[in-house]
Length: 82
Image (cartoon, rainbow, N blue to C red; front, side):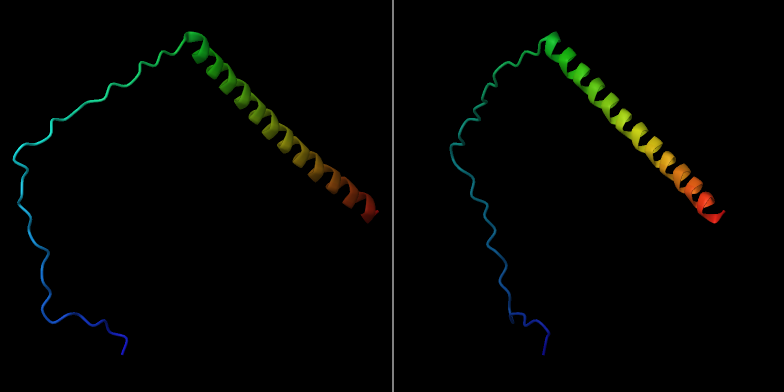
């Protein structure tokens, strides 16, 4: 019922061996020259360093806030037990 139905005699696709008599010459396109100034490279490097430092600062802040929350929770729990 759910089995696929295949054709009785499948025909293979025709084999095309036609080659053009006069092939078109390959035309190479020239790309424009791109010059990167040292100032641009320095700006990208400085931007990367600044973003990495900001990410590290956020991570350190998050860890210290988490530690402070655990310590405060522990102190409040001890205070309520007494």
